[in-house]
Length: 258
Image (cartoon, rainbow, N blue to C red):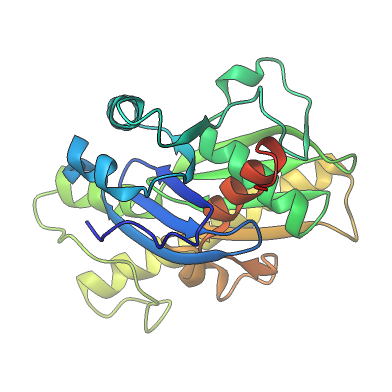
């Protein structure tokens, strides 16, 4: 785990996801330093060593055990930090029009906050993680729901785990739409097929929103650049969108330092 951020950074932003935990030192205006570590390797001492005295912490977690570990570590340093845990009760900039707001994942709220602040509405955030999630902002700027599908790596790993002869592959751009080897065939099915999945979901969302002309579609997450490279429906790729959302939520909920 890298050393804690520099004292000039007002925030420590932490995004705990299923595969990786990303963290950033941040001012109110921009991310200063971004790093990541495998979530499964996190320990209490990692969290305790990350923040500097006086830093405000903005935490998003979709892994309950790791989230509790972080909260426990920072609770022991309560006199040194202010801590904000992302939930639907906070100011997000965007509104929420959803039956049970408390069930929305913290990372999805952060993505919605970032999309609204950086791109406007209507908008769709496509987050390519362990699952691929689509989070939708209405033309009024409200979070109204989303779509969840298996992630690209989950799908390819499933083929490896459930068949006797198919290898594990790392998704990359296939050389051809027609595979000339087992690996090539799997890459063609995975990447082109996944683009088809994303394209169709976006088409259905656009139709339901009635956003025929203007719809901001931004991608983030591990395979965002790969899948978006040949999907004209996706206009922006922002690798650190969730962390930007945490920065924006921090600005909305913490008063400026004097």
